Amino acid sequence: MPDFPRSILEFQRQFPDEAACAAWLTAARWPEGFRCPVCGHDHAWELDTKAWTWECAKCHRQTSVTAGTVMHGSKVSLTVWFWAAYLMATHSNGISARQLGRQLGLGSYNAIAHLLILGGVGIGPDLASLRKFDSGISG
Ligand SMILES: [Zn+2]
Image (cartoon, rainbow, N blue to C red; front, side, top):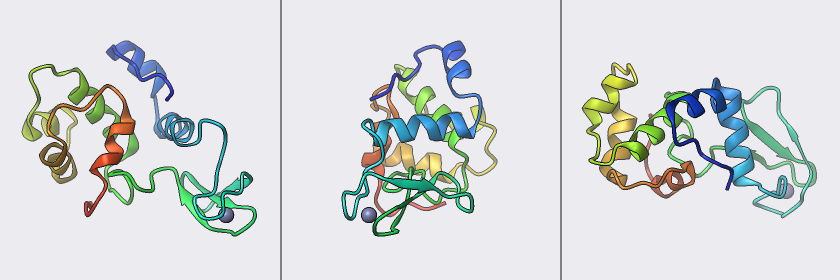
């Protein structure tokens, strides 16, 4: 698991944009390089047409770095999710969906609220724990 920042300054340096977040997710998901979830092949192309998505060179299955996570198909950007994870991980007394929505400037904070409801506030300081909030969440 790649390092996840523990201070705001570190966080800003490490995750300035969507690409930096996607790169972190890629490293977390495939620490030894890409591995196709269908056929196990280790060679893929990154697609230009779909963000943060790889196509297996053998079976052509397309896999997004966010597949299987609460972030997949979300209208909320990766940077916002990363901030949410950071804020949740660093608020020792917990943070409400309303507080989180306000801090992240989200008019609608549905997805964040879902995350809080499903995951509580006890997530560790790493985004891998977002994966367990997978099922049935959209938007
Ligand atoms: Zn494959």
